[in-house]
Amino acid sequence: MTGVESEVPRIHIVGRKNSGKTTLVCELVEELIHRGFRVATVKHTHHNHELDTPGKDSHRHREAGAAGVGILSPQMTAAFVPGPREAVDRYATFQTMFADCDVILVEGDLQSDAIRIEVWRSEVSEEPYAHETEGIAAVITDDDVAADVRVCQRTPLTGVADLVVELAGL
Figure: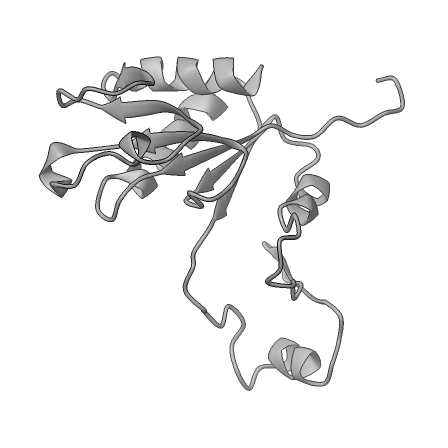
């Protein structure tokens, strides 16, 4: 290492509701780990969820005004860090937290400027985002679809994993 830490590559798996994003992310995690890579994941949501449990000590710490709250248990470490809604790179926190990983797979966040690949199924009945959204690198599908971007078969998974490895520069 040259003393300058490089960012962990981040690949977003995007797609419409019920397109298979979660299934694809889970299968990619297993395949990439099988190939010897360390993989972190982030679930992006545009919904306001209370991720901490109201009434519990950690939630009370946040309500009291703590800038960040961590939870340590014998098997898990968690952190709750409030972030501004403005156009700030909130993914930077994960760069630090997951610095020992080879790649970060994010489920969702169509608006990110990071690498995005779209999983698409004809059963969803809406056109792929790639038809209307700039910057999507590829569409992953087992259906016939015309796209101005690369189209990769969903099965076998090895082809999708090869694509992620390529796009992440691993």
